[in-house]
Length: 134
Image (cartoon, rainbow, N blue to C red):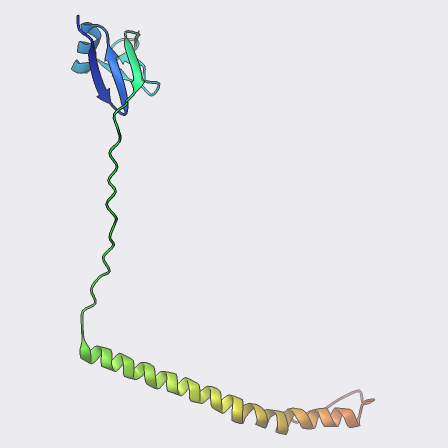
């Protein structure tokens, strides 16, 4: 009769008799979630001739850094030049449109439409109906 030690699933199982060890190694017995040895056949009788301890071997941790490779962009000089040209022209058109709105459109709208309506409103404060020329 020899003491047999089996390391599995992060535990160290010490078998004190050969019969229990042979049952486990042949697959006729298994360890359940509670780390109790049970027979596969029959009603699942518990075998109490096993000592269960946590495995005391050091855990080897892989400490290599994970390097994520960025996909390499294929170079297409013509496509890149066209895209840059379109982006530049679109940016220019948007800037011109905003300038036109701020410096030409809004002052015209203020001076020709809104301001005369306010002046008319000041002249006739007791009028029930106000007609603004929009």
